[in-house]
Length: 80
Image 1 (cartoon, rainbow, N blue to C red):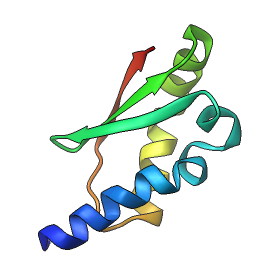
Image 2: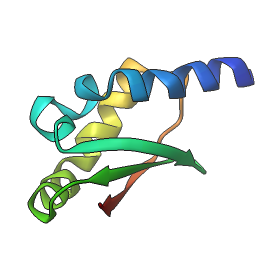
Image 3: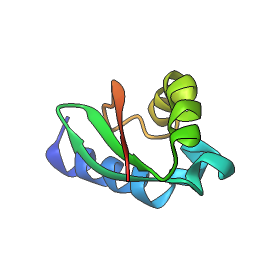
């Protein structure tokens, strides 16, 4: 895949985070980086971190469906 398409897809993750994570989770988290196909996300509270852990597979699937030009295989969650 051309690098331009990959970068464009990565940008869509940041711009459209609420579409991938849902309104509630997006209000308590922010994607900060992508490394080796892993999306790094900061979460503002331990309860939301746990909820995101439970929803991480669904979020990865939503990204794959809505942004097929970017490859995300997992989330790495950090508490801020």
